[in-house]
Length: 115
Image 1 (cartoon, helix red, strand yellow):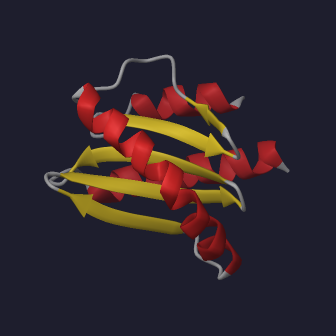
Image 2 (tube, rainbow, N blue to C red):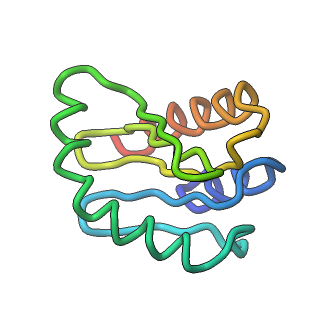
Image 3 (cartoon, one colour):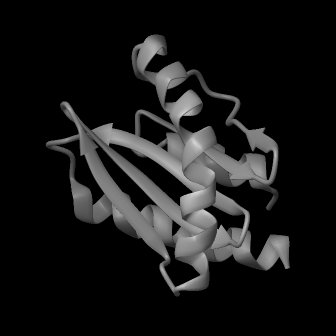
């Protein structure tokens, strides 16, 4: 399974509105359309450019995931490597446990691929 297939599988989870893999200067998107307003998606992409330095530092301190809430959405960031992370957006009232299990599974699969 490759990176895009992993992201496509994540998009099949009902509560995941959009996801992507950021790796270095590249961003990999699933084939499926985001289930979220496009302006929110672009704002997140722009914000993540500045957030990458924090993620790199967090990875060195052993942090594997960061979750924060923006308005009515949860932003999940699952670190895969020093310069790679899965980012997903879900509604604040999502089935958080299911989303976290799916993201952790995807993170472990991506770690194997990116070794």
